[in-house]
Image 1 (cartoon, one colour):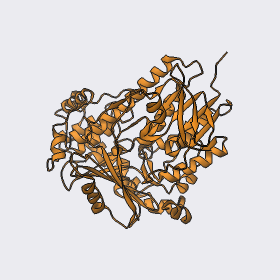
Image 2 (cartoon, rainbow, N blue to C red; image 1 turned 90 degrees about the vertical axis):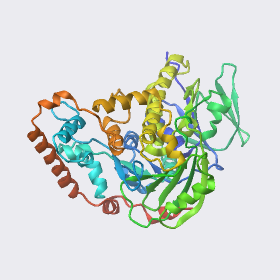
Image 3 (cartoon, one colour; image 1 turned 135 degrees about the vertical axis):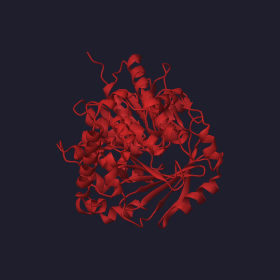
Image 4 (cartoon, rainbow, N blue to C red; image 1 turned 120 degrees about the vertical axis):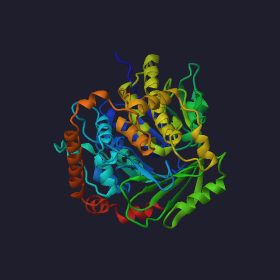
Length: 509
């Protein structure tokens, strides 16, 4: 007979806590597993706006959330990718688009066919073949039709820019309607038994909360996973030197664009996340190359629109817990680890961690092999994203500050070094199952940084150059014609999913 879990306790609300409650309530429906969220009234989200990746759409669909309602409730705008300003050279931009770039030709990766066309004297750019990049450039947007037979419409992907405070509020209300119990309290003490399992939590309302399994969403402090269970932390600061961020909100001065902007600065980079009702701004920087005061000035000098509230400093240590799942505790969100938001992967890692957890869902026997397999999978996810973020720094062309000169000589994990070496030879990238960033994503960053392979795949010489050129030219024209028929991003939001005015006002309180 199965020794099934009877209860799950999520400690901490916020985006991670309520995403966990929502997805687990969906996955455990009909199982009689009681889900409880302990949320402190004293702890509030930073609420600067969140930039996501396309897996947010999988989360929304899996949890049977009404997309229009969610967008309106969170003042969301759409996101087709990230524009990187001043990373390769001052004054130059490149774009990392979501979705596919080009169409594979005769079984060969499109990138190889495109390299062959360049060698033949053709001049189409890499991004000319990306529907998402073309949509972003012209600020066009429409939701992708289900099961579209049109290859252009089937090729683009999108995510959302969200208000983190409103996301937590929306999911909390949804979860409570779906039977999740919320306790407003602060954890004073964690009771751990002799076997190293969490027995119960002592709360500041003079009650105790026991559970079969605990999910730690207590942020950087890792109240359960670290302070109580002491699993240890894997520090990646040697690879990624940025260790602080300053954040601030501003009023919108223009309509929100369908992409995030990441601009390289003297000691790091700034972000701009446009929502319907305001813009989230931040500066991720390395304290050894900039003081807090300098960072605040850099950020405030870079923003547009009236500043809402005071700038806030957030210290962090890049890395992850040595075990994300240990005994009867799972660390989620900032409690599990932190990778700077250069590729907007924080919410994705919450979702991916939960997906792995549900696939390896424990019973009360807590088989160690199950947790070990889970940890190996999520460790690989963190390492992949770490390497992809490092890629932006180690390939950057800037040498105009001490920070960027450090990046030119920075240590690189062997896993990344090997990938770059193989790419430089002839543009090939090994893609493993479960990997998040596609080959198109890697090619977009490397192409944006002007790193191009020495050769292309030799069998492409069998292609007729004129026919290949004609195919690529026709594809670009088809993408452009399709995109220009789409509505403007701002108009699409106004017509289909405009956030109510009262929600916009409440969000700034």
